[in-house]
Image 1: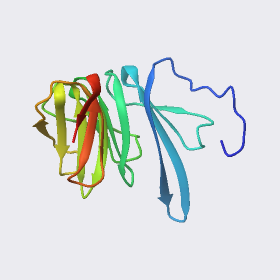
Image 2: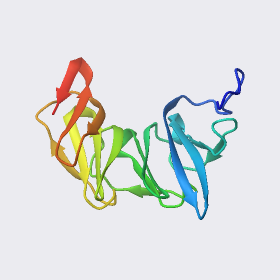
Image 3: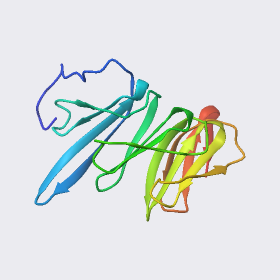
Image 4: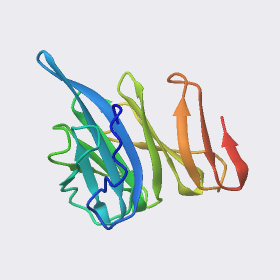
Length: 169
């Protein structure tokens, strides 16, 4: 990290960690790099020193958390098991649970711009929000494969991939 060898740097958690994301935040004239990792049992941790040390954040859930994504500014989204989507508007200090209308595992979540958020789920379900993740609509894809990742080149063109070599465009 920045030329410093830190071979024994350990994150002080016992849960499996499933995703990590770093983003730059500007606080007046100061820019800082924050990192977030999520995992089993509702685990959320963050760093503001390039991962040298990590601190726990309280998610308020015990579900397996699978994906974390910085939407805009101080706004974060986390996706997890049983339809769990959590939003934070204060760098992860507090979290709000979103009602997604599904009990499918939400495996990945991404921000597409212009308040559009998409998430890939088990059983071929895609969730889409046009209000920055406050509400979601389920989009059936015709697939029953679990979709593990989603990414878009713009608000209309994307791909989700999953089990058994599934690719949905």
